[in-house]
Image (cartoon, rainbow, N blue to C red; front, side):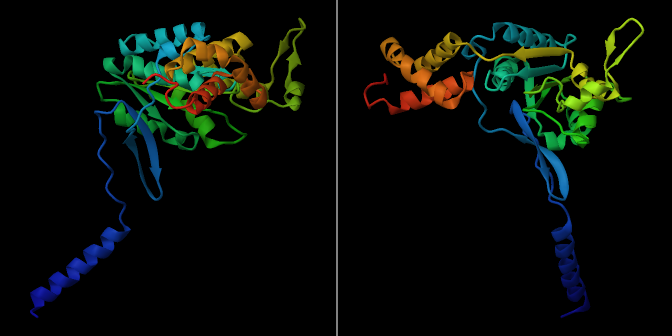
Length: 293
């Protein structure tokens, strides 16, 4: 073996060892998709992953939240049209359609250039990287943070505050943040917080620094939408809608009323999510031939 051949073999061996410790190349972003997830890789740069199967829920599928639906639809319409629009915080009772409303907005406006990026709470510190990645794109991006809440001292809390309103850099014109939470102020509220309230000379009550800090994040969302537990008739209306979507006849829907109420009683909730789960269970158990093909 000549000296040159030995050199080439050693060079190939060295390159193989170097490649083994280098992070893998980032996957190319499939910009043809209209929904993405922000993915973190251990020891490597995070990347934008296209979602292969997107929820097909529509605005018309969401019942008994008409006011909230109208407000977020109008805000999103302004956004995709390039007009001023607000970041949105959706809070309140579980299972009442907060997350579904955001997904339905995506389906409503995706044809007009709307895109959605789902970001886990643990990855909120990387929000500036996400914004930089999409800032030059022609599409309009909603960053979606689902079921958001923070404990004392979590880093994502301050990262989100800065991203909403607090950085020296202006928020990108083609990015908004839509977040859902069961907590209005996103932080745990404790009895001890009451001791920080103070009164002025006129007897007016003012929150202390601890309370001010806890509400400062939610106040940076320009639009707040509150969701409340459904009444019995609302719950039955939602269950009927989903039963109809699975092909049940009006007679079958009427017969399912008692079972729907018992299902909700067992679950301890009359939410839209529970109504949807009941409809899937009930329609799925009907004998073959009972549902229209």
